[in-house]
Length: 375
Image (cartoon, rainbow, N blue to C red; front, side, top):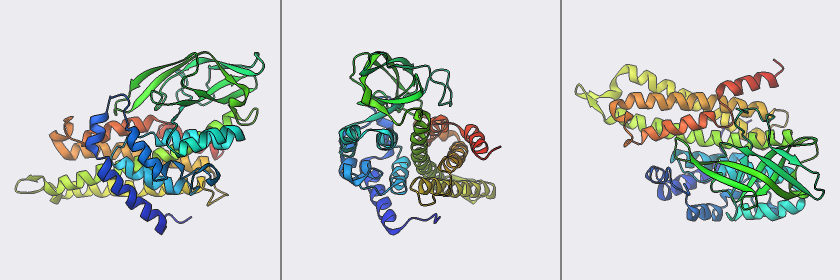
């Protein structure tokens, strides 16, 4: 697989970079943190008009069907500016669940709305005791009512849950774990907004005898857990692309500081010890870039013999370790000013902490990679 961008992808990356610089500087992320909603619906519509929300969605639903490699370059540039828009939650998690597991009616109802920026999704799968296990599901789905399902349970750490119009909910049906499309406005759904340490929105979502139609179930019977794994792999690959952009921006900010901060009459970047540390960080970024590009390519089917799950786990393990190391080193190299909330470099460390634990940390994905390989 070629781990380089083609000409179209390079042009898209430049367009995304120009958009992020002009419309979503880091100062915007600082201003929005902890607010509700912690994103801009105006900017979200602009992203839809640019076609970004439909990059992985089939053309018959209004998307472009270009694939994950194209969305990767957009997410990388938005990650560089810490843009809080819910692309991963909606354009990857929500759209992938509907496209892979939804009926024709559900696909027709939701996918065009996602492409147009009219609908925001959130994946509600995490429970208080589950940590990273997708099979640890206590939320129940009762089919005894006949033409409907009744959902009961509580989900925590629902990324973008406080701004979602619909949820993709994992619940334990009589035949195993299943996924359901649930409107946020449905009777019995209650959303408790929360804020993560990086300022992004999250929520605790409770389902109290929530009734949904039978056709709101996604995927084939007894295949819900496998569908959930595929959905999260798609979301994880997108998050890794965002992490790549963020760590690259933190590294560039640190290099600039090393060139301009003067100590003992010379720029501190002239000190060999700091040069060696910066060189190691550069290597970490390039390794992470290769892993992210490989995972995106595998999800696009460019290498059918490769395991998408293994490629995604390699990317997440690498990005989690690299982003945390770069964020810590960036704080160290900035010295005392790096410890202040007023300096932007601290925003990247907070983002790194959240990303590290989202969809599984490095240790989880190393273990998953080993299990998938038969070890």
